[in-house]
Length: 135
Image (cartoon, rainbow, N blue to C red):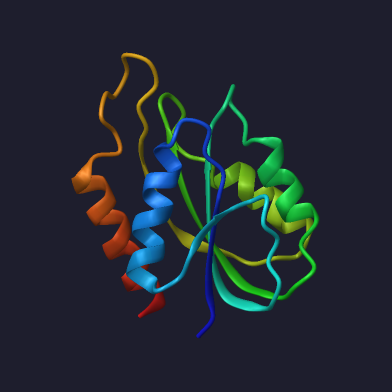
């Protein structure tokens, strides 16, 4: 099974999850600036909420995809909004890319809010989630 991990992170919160997920599934965590170069069965795609939306980098990554993706598994961090699941799902639907129902979400630190998040326990839960997805 071919698995890839891509993410966008401004403050490092989503990168922490991406690194934990990548290590758990034996992949490399790369930013959304690096396009997929080959077909994948599972793409773990990480993003954050900035001003109630996903970053342009994530939008460009999805729009510019040229390989077959079996399914995308969303993971995200945010200080205020619940997750990026619906927003990313809408972008994927426009490209006819399937999205898993499962997702991983946790709070991310932003200024004084949620200091230290995601913490070691969050990263461990992200790794366990990823292992469960890939079986």
